[in-house]
Length: 142
Image (cartoon, rainbow, N blue to C red; front, side, top):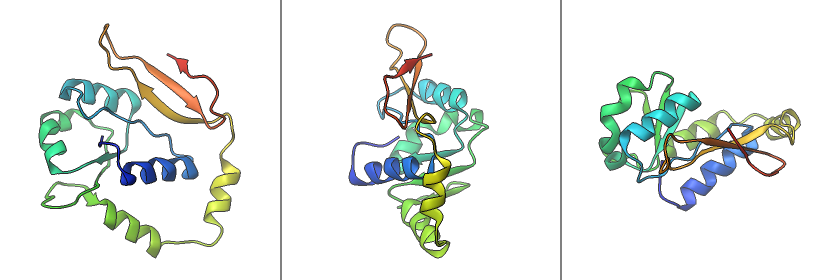
């Protein structure tokens, strides 16, 4: 949940390379809509732009039981349980770099695997999700 930025683009690309399904969330959604998406998608790792974005939705966090880690693009003044900055995550990646890891990810991800799970804004009712595979075929609304 972050505005378009180089960091967002790099995180999205990293998810694609790693075979991780990403679930972008509009920054303008109401907290209850954010909660619905996190719970429905069983999101485990949640990327947020900054502390202000977290403060806007902090009330729903106790309901989001699937969350294991919060990662802030801007880690300034972050004092939140299970949270790290994107810079810390990048350093962890550099420290854990394993030869052949990218090739392993590439070979384990199939073109038909889901790459992205997106949700409608819910303006006409309950939000609906649609899925896009790595093949980039037409989305399938669920």
